[in-house]
Structures are given as structure tokens and as C-alpha cells.
Image 1 (cartoon, rainbow, N blue to C red):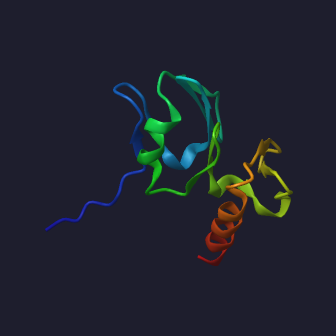
Image 2: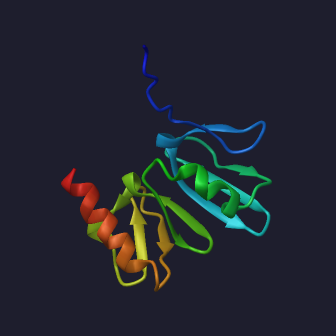
Image 3: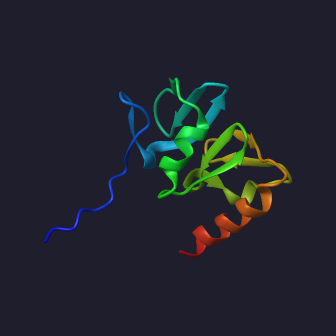
Length: 113
């Protein structure tokens, strides 16, 4: 019996498939989502963050604000200030007050493993 390894390709809608490890940030804007990549230009799709968020549960993504879903692998925990997290490419993102504790906990856990 062959076990299949989990794929890193995520189908965000019928035509859009992305590699989860290349996505740094997802930014919601009403009915559209902008997908930011580590390399390359951002991609805008006509899907809400609420529909995309369950697809990312098997990867290191966390919704840190009503507008943002962050890939924790690209967050720089040494630059986590009161309500701003800085990505490795010096982009600053607002963290909601209610998600700060969970973000800090997940960042500490990801450093342990």
C-alpha cells in the first residue's frame, strides 16, 4: 500500500492552485483576496478569506486580523511589537488585539519544532 504524502498545492477556487509554502500573506478585501508570495507578484482572486481559511488548516497559517491570514514561517518573531508583526521582507501587518496571544504562542511553538 502506498501512502500519499500531503501535497502543498491548495485549490483556492476552480482555476487557482497555489503552493502553500510560497504564500506569505493573504489579504481580504470584501469579496476579493490578495495572495502575496515570497517571490513574484501578488494574485487577486474573487473568493473571501472565510472560504479560504479552512483550506489552510493543515499548514502554518493563522488569521491575525479580520483582513489578514499570515504564514507563520515568514513572520519574524523578534520584530513582534504590541500590535504589529513584521514579515521577513520588512512588511508590517496589524495584529488584532484578540489574536496577539495566540500568535505569540504559535510562534513560540514553531521555534520549538
